[in-house]
Length: 192
Length: 395
Image (tube, rainbow over all chains, first blue to last red):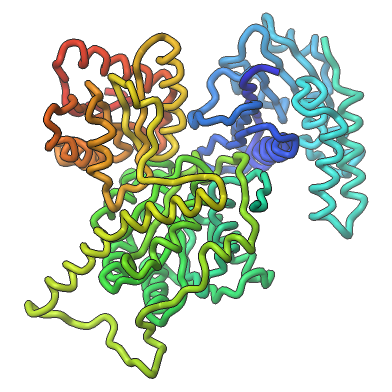
């Protein structure tokens, strides 16, 4: 893992980009690493493009400015592609993880992308089939863990179970659905 | 050995958690972005029966502080939270809280002041109330926000001080930024803050007192002088409590924090979250052989003038980063106080001011490195150029 890993999340207000960043942050803390998770607040409007960020490191993180050149970009909503420059500041060896039914090759063509590595996962389909609703951030977390190795799959599953057991004591189907969504994302994330 | 739990918390969550563990008698509050979550989360604790607090939902910040004043005068341990326009609306009663020597603790999230309307971070709200007789503790991150809230109770309530205290965080940057922090157990927080023993509670019918009385030319001056004495007593208390906190929980607190200043030729002084970013700039410059250092000011009221002069006396050139503009045509408030603190030194460092980050304008490591570059030039040439500059603004 890089000394300091920076991640940028793209989503629309209400889709869970901020929650995704916070959930990842909580999981990372449970492994003893240091992290930051923060949204880029503009006017808060449902459906408007928004960004959230993570910083992850083995050492304490003191920097408190925005992330300008992330190594990983996560796109929760494929309709943002072409409207928001999701590759801004992403270095040549950077990683793009996109929620879309398309293949990485199709995305590369669509974005006329040079360099970088593209991964895709149909997170809407996975979450609809496992949770009954399109909540893409849970499967995206699975894809993120698989692609970057920030946390190992077992840790992510255990931590998610632990967190959800507190919140959804009386709804075991929510817990199982989320765990299944993450596990399926491990398997279904597509690389180039 | 104290119990330490590593947890992921935003600044607002950390402050609300501290409030739960302190378990105050009364909280009166009115919501305002970006401080809303603090009292929103806390009201959840009240509703869930996790605290014994009487929560008073009021119709404005002026009423919030007024209710706090009433409850505190009655003898209760009292807390609230606000930001920006909320603190400005409280301003009138902030002075009454300190004038009546009421140890109210306020979680304040630093946010710009209108106009134009802006919800993001700067220090204008806190700085506008720097002369209100409140102790002001600035936090670099969520951990310090949590720790400052706990210490604030002890500082405010100390009989030699008896002054209201605000612990601040930088709006959104810290209030909504999640970080890994160490939590202290409920028991240990309770033990640390102890039971509040008000000296003159209004509800003690055996010793009736008058609160909020009128002073003419006969006593007003004496009573105002006593507030200054309380503020003058605060440094000893703040130092003792910062040390006690460190001895118990491993994190020591003073008035300032020096980073690589021992042999520094150029230094930046700043408050709040920017100190963390500046630390990275210092590391980068040190790796390039520049003798750069950083002074973070945690306690702005009372102002640690002597300590600052002592720490900075051998530095050649200093830049103060002010996240508010005094609009005095003579630099920001932090600059003026630091520059004044250095006046009595036999050989004074050169000092310049940078107003930065108003309305949440981001400040990057590269911006801070440029300031150090300018300081190196100043230190070589002995000429400061512009005394006050604006960093990161489009002109």
